[in-house]
Amino acid sequence: MKIANKINITDYLVGGELKEWNGDKSEVFSVIKNENNLPTHLGTVPSLDEDAAISAIEEADKAYNRGRGKWPTMSVQNRIDCMQKFVVEMEKYRHEISKLIMWEICKSKKDAYKEFDRTIDYIKDTIEACKDFDRKGARFIKEDDIFAHIRRGPIGIVFCLGPYNYPLNETFCLLIPALIMGNAAILKPAKYGVLFFNYLLKAFKECFPAGVVNIIFGRGRAIGPPIMKTGKVDILALIGHSSSAVALQDYHSDKNRLRLVLGLEAKNPAIILKDANLKLAVDECLKGSLSYNGQRCTAIKVIYVHKNVIDNFLKSFNEKVDELIIKNPNQEDAFITPLPDPKQPKYLKELIDDACLKGANIVNKKGGEIGDNFVFPTVLFPVKNDMRIFHEEQFGPIIPIIEFDDINMPLRDMSDSNYGQQVSVFGENSNELGPLVDALVNLVCRVNLNSSCQRGPDVFPFTGRKNSAVSTLSIYDALRSFSIRTFVASKDNRINNDLISDMTKTNKSAFISTDYLL
Image (cartoon, rainbow, N blue to C red; front, side, top):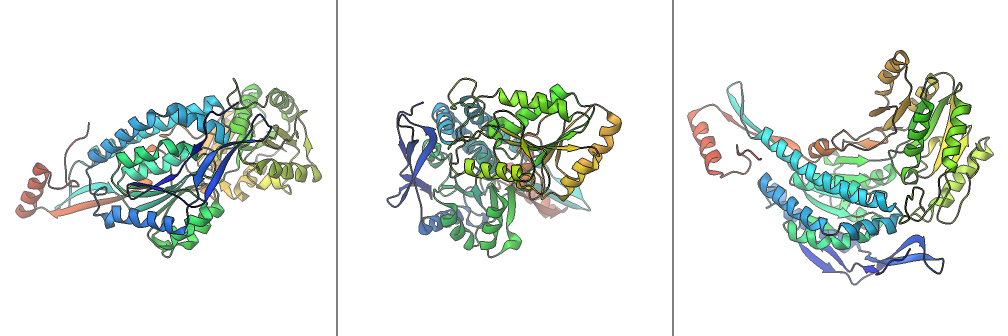
């Protein structure tokens, strides 16, 4: 696997200008080995300093201008026009962006292209949802002799920080709804999965007014705190670890007015009941725990199996796991691929060693095989609550399995957990499943019946309880998360009625409008 040309990003986008950076650079490597059996050098990105970070927040502040800027006061249709123009430009680079996702984060070729296509679909669906919101707001309602014209309006400046596992899709699930609702944004791409922005900087510059989109590169610890310390950030939008979210919040001078839109850790369990269809359960748990090496917050990260079926489940599951082959992402049918973070194999080995020291066994034949850029899927059994793997989100191909007899055991563990995103339940007895579902919906935010945990479809709510999320992301919910209901009220009298009538007929106000977007 070879890469033809290195990409050296020299510019960053602030205030509608591509500014050349002449300071420190960060080298970007892929853990995929080159012909010399060394990590492949892919290019460089700017490593911006505090001054550059401050310039980004100042330009975003100028563009928003306390709600009086060109972008927040623009009609919804005109904002949509900008977004549609951006989509056209972005689609030109499908191959280049997907290839870089494959190289940087070792996502299979199929999944890399899938991430790009899904992001395009997400943007288009968000545009349609925004139109729907506007159509519903294109009317007046009357209550107690008062007319009200209610719409959703922007909140202010959004600081977006995306994750490395879905550096395009999940990052844009924050950025796109924030922009289309009229906010100004500062985006800091993830540590891994950054080079493809080389193809998008110019598109953002040309498609949006100056200062509406600001893209800066560098270490989060260097550029995040100075931005937050200004107190000018109105929404912190982050997909990552809760410790990062807490740290950034602490720098803000007015936490009481800081809105949070956070997608954080999860420890999603699967529960295999005694009457489960084991073939279905094995297939779904395999996919759910090991898709993209388990590097998904929505991955199944622990499996509870009823004692009556534990032996049969383990036998079938282990056989399926051992059939998997580690391949480079560009190879046909690649499923297990190298881990993009060079520190991850060492961390995962520590989790395996800790579990084995405390009584767990590696129960699949090929489990425990570890290289400098990979960990073969490792099934651990029996796992107990004194093991690190029981509590920590492993974010890699380790599958802890726990035997249970009483359903209250996994319910108790879920209740005590710091996380509460999703659960998968496998069974066919409605008498047992009915009460179980009623308990589970109050512990997590998505209960998957006889299927793996997952993100989509994007129109469904995507959130979590406890340390797993703050606010809700999906197409419709994200638009709500990045906006606020606001309205114009007028008493029913001749002066107001004539005034409102004139404004709706002459389009003198972008807000007071009954135009119907098709």
